[in-house]
Amino acid sequence: MNILHISFECYPIAKVGGLADVVSALPKYQNTHTTDTSVIIPFYKNEFTKGAIYESVHKSTVFMRDTDYSYSVEKVNSPDLGFTTYLVYVEGLLDRPNVYNYEDDAERSIIFQLVVLDWLNTKAGIPDIIHCHDHHTGLIPFLMAHGDPYTQLRDIPTVLTIHNAQYQGKLSYDKLGCLPSFDKNKIGLLDWDQLINPLASAIKCASRVTAVSKSYMLELQERANGLEGLLRQEKDKCVGILNGIDLDTWNTETDPMVIQNYKISNVVSGRKENKKWLCDNFGFDINKPLFGFIGRLVGEKGADLLPEIVQEAYDVNHIDASLLILGSGNKDTEERLTLLKEKYSGLYNTFIGYDEKLSHIVYAGADFLLMPSRVEPCGLNQMYALRYGSIPIVRRTGGLRDTVIDIGDNGFGICHDQASVWDVCYSMKRAVSLYEDQGKYREIQKQIMEIDHSWERSAKEYKRIYELLIPN
Ligand code: ADP
Ligand code: GLC
Image (cartoon, rainbow, N blue to C red; front, side, top):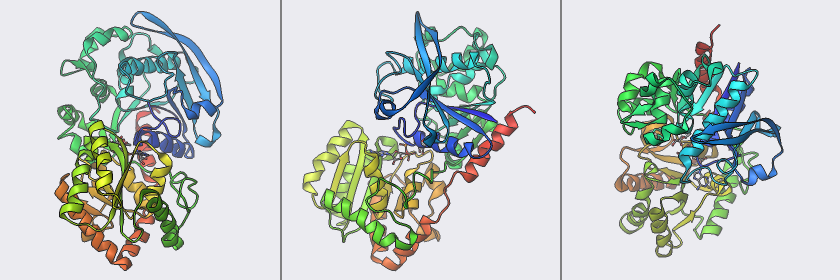
């Protein structure tokens, strides 16, 4: 079985969030299980591509709007990745350092999709399944079925995985001129609410739709940023499949990014070294419990609550613990978090930015990880935290609901129902009490490190879907 994953991110080539982690771990896992899996993403001018060796496997041109763009498909020579990776290079559009946040992101995602389709349309040995991830690849199922140039691709089944339905890639109709000619009777398949909506189009046109946890798939039928009606309508082809984590990368015994490696038998001393490093570098007292937060500073993650949480935790609840926040995103939140550093110095600190190494040390050194998410399709942080022995404190939503059970329900985490300052502070107080009972804390820590979050089960579910779609 030959699978092609199409995405805008893939770790370690280009990562903004969990999408990248999934689009490297799932293909790697699939490749060890009788599937021949590859990944195609845009080319980025970054540290990874600077050091990589490529082979151009295809060069041609695609026409977008009124211009012919030359492109190349570069195969990355990197056996360590565990799957074949292709990068789409288009001078001026797909040759930038960052993944998102350019004014012409619409054109960048359209040209990426046009190149992938053009390449596949001429390629010998086309995939058995095209697996698209999120809205940046959402026009592909429609164009494969109804785009005039892509006659070769008509019968290939497509799977769409929704990692985040908040972002839909909506385009005004003046972008229609960027698309190749297609069957105009089918234009409704591109539309949602009088806009071209790539995510909606993929939900309509893909052979199967998955979301990254069972609870999130159910929630989407109630709240999906305007697409809930569509998801209810299409529910028979939709299924929630929980993400796994890459146990090669996220392995406490071998992780090269942490200060001290450890395993369950020496978890206390190993994690202590990581906590010590964090306390030394961020000015905390190692004897107090340490809370961490890692993530994009956006409303979905409840990040706008963080500044108030800091103040309420210390001024009102007098919580005797330290808090380290690692993240970047909303500028106002970044500034508010930075301003609080001085007032709460010794108890609270923040690193505004993206730092992969620091994130690993936080999982390995913080005693608890906060995730007050309003929306969390799956969430990988809580799974990394569990694996590394840091107890997650989560709001019951999406994948957090599916992966963390409260200690009060014979579980191993701390859960709350509202994304509110009050709920988070109350959970922090429960955490401090748990920490004071070191016997219980250590028992839970060992328990969480043994939970199986490998891709084994989920990859089987994907395989079942692929098998149903491939004609015998
Ligand atoms: P999302 O994809 O919505 O951002 P996930 O929980 O699925 O959320 O994945 C987030 C990933 O990004 C995790 O690997 C997390 O460690 C990482 N991450 C997020 N923000 C940062 C940051 N500022 N520095 C380092 N890693 C980060
Ligand atoms: C998205 C979601 C996150 C999920 C990740 C990987 O970015 O916000 O919850 O874990 O995709 O599927």
